[in-house]
Image (cartoon, rainbow, N blue to C red):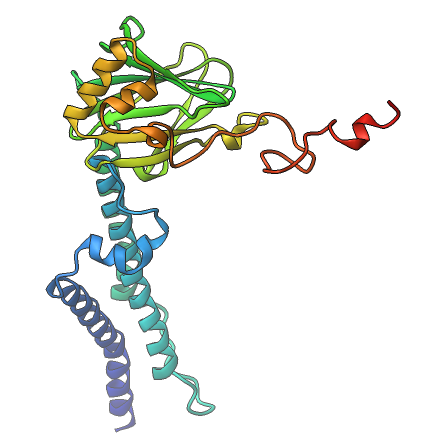
Length: 326
C-alpha cells in the first residue's frame, strides 16, 4: 500500500512540470492571439510607448523597415519576459515552503530541458533572419539611382555636390558649400532613389540625419562610402556629424530639406543656372528667413570669455582686462 502511494506521488510530481508547460504555452499563445485580435499595428504600439527609445518612424522607406524591426523585437522581448516572469512567480507560489519536509527531488526533466534549450535558439534564429533581411535591404544599391549626391566633409562643415552619374568620374552639376556664417542646405526630392557618395578632406566624419534612423562614416582618402535612401515625407530636418572630429565637431551641422520632385527639379535647374542656394530656395517658395536653415543656426568661431557660442559674451582678449596698462 505504501509503495502504491509513493508511485502515485511520483507520477503526480512528474506530471506537474508538464502541466506547467501546458499552462505557460496557453498563456503565451493567448497573449499572442490577444495582440493579433486587438488589431494593434506595430506603429500603433510604438506610438503608445514612445517608440521604445527610437526618435520615431523615420522619413525614408528604409527607416520604416528598421523601425518595424525594432518595435517588433521589443514586443517579442516583452512577451518572452512576461512568460519567464510568470513562470518564476508561479514556481514561487506553487513550491513555497510548507514545512520542514523537502519536496520531491528530480535529477532531470527532459521535456523541460529541451524547452529551455530549443526555445532561445529559435528566438535568436528568427530575430537574426529578419535582421539580415532588413540590413540587406538598407544596404542595397540600385544600378541607376534617380539622384546622386556627393557628400564632402571637412573641418568643420559640409559640401554637397549634385552629380550627373555614379562614381568619381561623374561630373558635379551643382554644389552647396557651408561656411561659418551660413548653414549648408541639402535639398532632396521625395519618392526618388537617392544615392550618397561620401568622402572627407581631412579626418573621419559621420553623415547623420536622426529622422533617417541611419548614419554612415565619411572617410578621407580613396574610400567612398555609399548608401541609398528614398524619402517619403516632406519637411526640414537638422543633420549632424556623428563622429568626434575636432574642436567644433558639435557645431558641424547642416539642414536636409525634402520637397516634392517637381520643386526639387526647379531648385536644381536654378542652381545649374548659377543661382545661389538661397536664390534657388526662393525659386521654390522659401523666401526671407526660410531661404536659410531653420532647424539649426551658425556658430561663432571665436572663443568667448565663458565658453563657445554664447550670446552677449565678450570675446577673450577684449574688454577692460585687455586694455589695462595702455
